[in-house]
Length: 117
Image 1 (cartoon, rainbow, N blue to C red):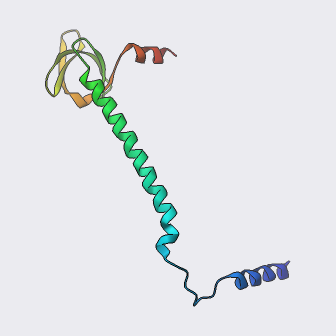
Image 2 (cartoon, one colour; image 1 turned 90 degrees about the vertical axis):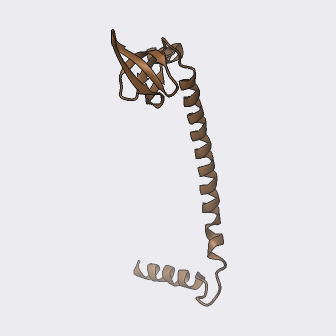
Image 3 (tube, rainbow, N blue to C red; image 1 turned 135 degrees about the horizontal axis):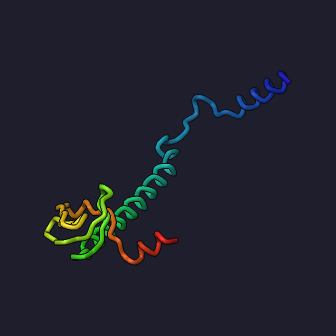
């Protein structure tokens, strides 16, 4: 068994390239990895832009009377829409002002249908 290991090691040493022989440009050996990373980052940024655009559209179409879920986990109804804020009624007679980006989710019929499944 030991002799088989030595024979395998000797074959591997003979198959290895000579130390003085140039191996080529080391950057070229990493080129496939670099290309894969660039493509991956491109698709990730595209996906994030789509999600951000979808979220912005969701916030832009909210009007008075829309049910929302805030990022803090509080549910309420939009009582007033301002330039950068919403006034949300979280209980009868209890209103809070939140920035538009504080809205995590707008409750629509589609969301309610998904929750029932």
